Image (tube, rainbow, N blue to C red; front, side, top):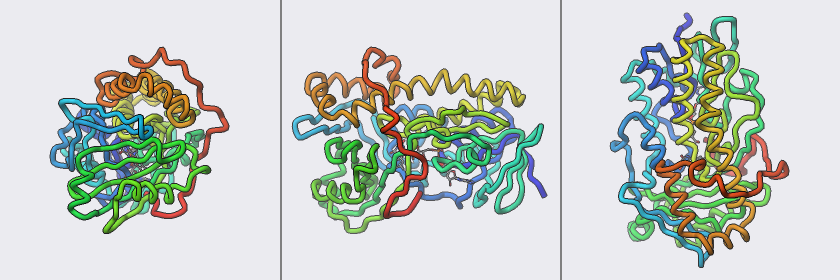
Length: 391
Ligand SMILES: Cc1cc2nc3c(=O)[nH]c(=O)nc-3n(C[C@H](O)[C@H](O)[C@H](O)COP(=O)(O)OP(=O)(O)OC[C@H]3O[C@@H](n4cnc5c(N)ncnc54)[C@H](O)[C@@H]3O)c2cc1C
């Protein structure tokens, strides 16, 4: 028996659920095909910048662990900045709960949810895509690949890669009540503790999510620097669960739509290179993929062209500027610190406007002239993290 839909969305993360929500709301028959049993843990800080929150179609109050109206950015002992807003700058969630809320929202609009179904193969014919899963076949006129950084769908559909993959660690840590009190008051981003990257403390309802990433993984032993970071902050874990995965900090180089398959979120490489935050553009690209299908009236060539145009209009210009800023932030710490010593409050305020969605990179920083990534700074998909579990 083969199940048939207009659209099969592979992956129940923010990209997939956002696409499915728009499609189902527009009366398109859509299935979310997810390999895990839901809700499922996802390796992620679970920090939702306000620009992501405002792009979601539903309120997230049931899954809020903690909200922060002020955030600390620490570049060195002398260069510490704190920004404030009347409404939350970053909202802390756990991704199992957040993603499940978004799945249920899409299902509420009429999307079919097929969970514990891994897609293992894909074949495109003239008028549809046939998906093989470990529990039967699915046919659809279009497939939205929202299956994350490791995207099986992109590989099966023949997309090239070229994404800049950065390993990242996430630790879920229980500490004593006194220690939790001490660390739960602020969300902090430390840029001076990890070479070519940053470390963070995201306080949740009753535990700390602490993580680290480096854009030059060959120069850094992430587990060691994270342990050092914990020691320096006097965070003494009672329990610690380590998870490692990768974040794609640059997009694929050969397009995002072909043969009735549209790539979204991490599968496309749409995480923000400055913040390494992926949820905003995962949601945005999922919504754009759905919009292309609806506006293109399910005509393959029109849909594919429309999606490429929408990505070029709304996502790629932001990522281009962000990549150049990331180069300064992570690869030129001396210049970075000199610039922040002079303009720190103005720069952190500008960054806050971007991450809250009050402004964009293009509106805020077009005049900043900084070098592009050199080819020598690229790493590739499949970077292994020595310890921990892949998410
Ligand atoms: C350590 C770490 C910390 C991070 N912290 C943050 C943060 O605080 N804030 C933030 O905004 N971003 C953060 N990110 C990035 C963020 O997690 C991703 O950018 C985001 O989850 C991408 O969403 P997505 O929907 O594209 O894919 P995902 O959320 O990865 O969802 C993909 C889904 O596809 C499913 N799937 C995969 N293969 C198949 C298959 N073959 N068949 C069926 N289903 C499949 C997976 O099970 C999964 O549910 C972090 C990433 C890491 C690694």
